[in-house]
Image (cartoon, rainbow, N blue to C red):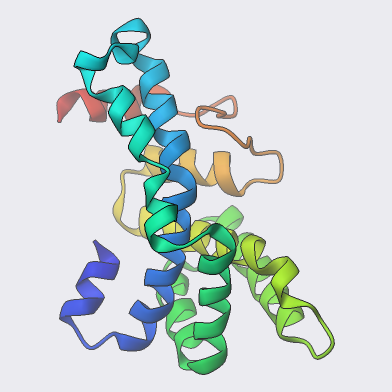
Length: 189
């Protein structure tokens, strides 16, 4: 929704970079998300009548239509190279949450260092493009969640995606996560 709002406002620098980051992220995460949803439904999700098998089959089409992960990640680097103000606008958005979560702050600091290393003369930015774009996606998500989501949701995201000992798959949450508040929120909708 934040990127969509940038299309309605004067946010060209932010939206160019954020849209490219979002395209990469959605294309990479959609198949895993569909598979996880199907798994949650068990056998009921596997049968064709549920609609989930089609969602699972169709989810890889995102990267077919939008370009491979490498192409999408390189598009972000190209946008940053052509429009350096995009990176400034991206960090201005992300840093609206500065000081609210130490894990997010550390992630943003690490992202800045990583992007500076990619831009350094003599580096091969292509090899770090995917990691940089993933880190940008996580930073933007974390910032938006910390600012706009219930505390339990933002904390679970930061703990599971930004902490050093975070998991790499859906549902990998550390002890102490307020899962009850997250489930209650989902069931109230």
